[in-house]
Amino acid sequence: MHELKELRSQINNIDQELVKLIEMRLDIAIKIAKYKKRYNIKITDQSREAKVLEQNISYLNNKDYASIISEITKDIITFSKEVQGNVNNN
Ligand SMILES: O=C(O)C(=O)C[C@]1(C(=O)O)C=C[C@@H](O)C=C1
Image (cartoon, rainbow, N blue to C red; front, side, top):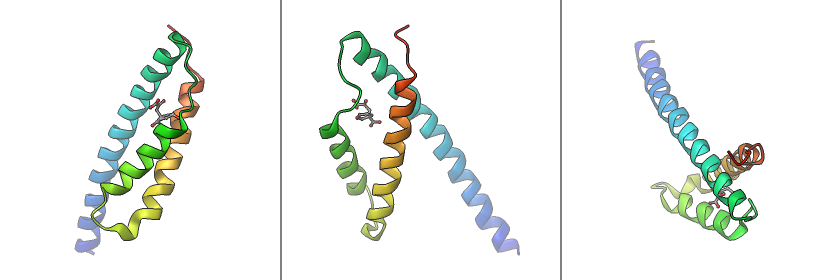
């Protein structure tokens, strides 16, 4: 029981970091959307998305998680584009 509590505490700390980082990533995605709006550039950039996917998989120590990281990255990009779609240029 003590061990479970300790492990859950580790998960809580990791989740806190993840949320902080996801929030930072979304804030940057909004900045990119504003830049793209200003210069009339399309939000979706397939080659950049492929690069992000490839990079994120390369960061893994355990390649058994490759398909999980691939799915999570695709979801992150989807939500990134969702917030980017709500951006006004101000
Ligand atoms: O890098 C960009 O150009 C972005 O707009 C960010 C981002 C991403 O979330 O990584 C989102 C949409 C694009 O299709 C590519 C990448």
